[in-house]
Amino acid sequence: MSYISEYKQSIDHPALFWSEKAKDLEWFDFPQKILSQDSEGINHWFSDGKMNTCHMAVDYHVNNGRGEQTAIIYDSPVTDTKKSYTYSELRKEVAKCAGMIKAQGVEKGDRVIIYMPMIPESVFAMLACARLGAIHSVVFGGFASPELAVRIDDAKPKLILSASCGIEINRVIEYKPLLDGAIELAKHKVNKCIIYQREQSQSSMIDGRDIDWESACKIASEADCVKVRGDDPLYILYTSGTTGKPKGIVRENGGHAVAMKYSMSAIYDTNPGDVYWAASDVGWVVGHSYIVYAPLIQGCTTILFEGKPIMTPDAGAFWRVISEYKVKSIFTAPTAYRAIKKEDPNGELIKNYDVSSLKNLFAAGERLDPPTYEWLSNNLNIPVIDNWWQTETGWAIASNMTGIERMPIKPGSATVPAPGFDIHIIDDNGKELGRNEQGNISIKLPLPPSCLATIWGDLDRFKSGYLETFPGYYVSGDGGYFDDDGYLFVMGRTDDVINVSGHRLSTGEIEEIIGSHDSIAECAVVGINDNLKGQVPLGFAILKSGVTESNADTQKSLVKLIRDKIGPLACYKETIIVERLPKTRSGKILRKTMRQIVDGEEYVVPSTIDDPAILDEVKEQIGKR
Ligand code: COA
Ligand code: AMP
Image (tube, rainbow, N blue to C red; front, side, top):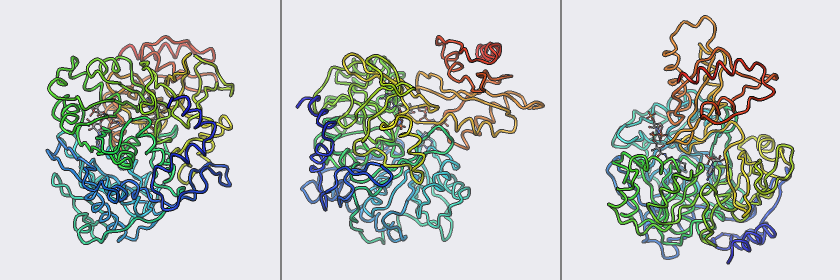
């Protein structure tokens, strides 16, 4: 089949197209309503279907002859552990874990926060929630207490699942004090926490609130899959918006399962039984979709890697895993490949391993920069495929559709829209742009299955943030263009969101925190280019008059403040102290111009600038870095 005919069918007859794809899954009751609208005008896929995502990902395979196949390989160089679970073993672990969660009174529709490292129990917990119809919300382990607290207050969980610690290369990161701090800060009171005690660190437990995971699991009875509707939420995943408050992206069961299954064949060219590895973290959307749900729904073997691309123990870690488990496809963020390239510029370590099982390499989370593309391509001699997506969609909006028709690769482009995504480039006035014209990448409604149905508890924010800018379209927040061949080039965010090591952060949120510091009168934060991490935040701050502490002390305390409030993953390291900030006459800070100066790009001084002398002052300070 050609890409064009598949794509055209998905756009011309979406309901028919996706109803055919839905037949590849085992439903309890196949949906009658394939695509429907609710009273608010929001589209839902497969709303009246009866199903269970955990059944589709686990039990189905056990019942259909895959029980003895390996479902999960856990490889943890940081703890020197390797362990695998067959689908039958996974079913048992998940059913027990679900029983343990159920024993705490968790029912269909209740929220459960999972704040855990990359261990098998995190995957069991996600699937166990799905099994019960409970809505999980996984919070990345690198977030500090206040970030966790905001998510607790928003999702209002009945239960939190956590572990005593995570391990960052050779450092033990105690999770329990962060969890306790978050519960203390949150207004919503959580009565029960189940804690997995890792041998690297044992946490102290709070009587009456904290429950030991292993003992609770031992006495739990196995729980069965609960029937849910296609439009019941599977999970909430928080992501950064332009304000300090993260957005709880709501993913519905039916559309998600269909898109996951479809994408494994159409985009990633994998079959049941293949070994698939997404080197990400279960705290991110890539981890949700491609460590846990999609490979399991497809009947693949998935790898859970608790390590880093470098230093665990070296830049050959990825090649070791590929050769050891005969990985067919690997998927991670370009920053990870850049880290490897930096340590091993000539790809010498690749030669130590037999990586012949690897057929495709995928990258997403940020644009795959052409030098990294070239390095991977030259050293591995396999297709290196960039795919563009967002937490909001849960799967790629644009990619080379390797399972349908392999298209020639153009470095720097995410190739073509995935079936179901009707992409248009629109200028700020709502006018559709032609080929080679850069504008707002927008997707004509209806969005295909798996895309967000709302923002948890804030339908208005969903409408105003995504649907109202260009009526009839979802506005992605990314800018870009189509070239003459219909290849999509995604050029970066058009809002205040930055991408640090593939992690999405809001500069607005960082500004709010810096602005709360006692010594700071005003500030601006921009995302500047970084060779390894893609972007890192850089602050500009004006000190309050009469501040006596030294610049160095202010710098240090701002770094600590961001680490304490957001977490180390923000990689906030530097603040440039200025006397004044350049602004337009209407008072808008000229962030873009400051970023361009730092990055050494050409820039035009905006005609709306209030006082050009301020820009010169700032330039001078930048020059002193
Ligand atoms: N728990 C606690 N802390 C964490 C953490 C976690 N799960 N993940 C990261 N951190 C900490 C790190 O220890 C580091 O702390 P430090 O400032 O005290 O050293 C900080 O957050 C920044 O981490 P990171 O961005 O990972 O930078 P790094 O220099 O340690 O490593 C890379 C660089 C490229 C190796 C690393 O960023 C990487 O592997 N990236 C892949 C990104 C990815 O998988 N993205 C998912 C989207 S697809
Ligand atoms: P997240 O929701 O954390 O996955 O981040 C989504 C954002 O990452 C997108 O809006 C883009 O800005 C960026 N992004 C992800 N993948 C790509 C890609 N392949 N090319 C360019 N930008 C990307």
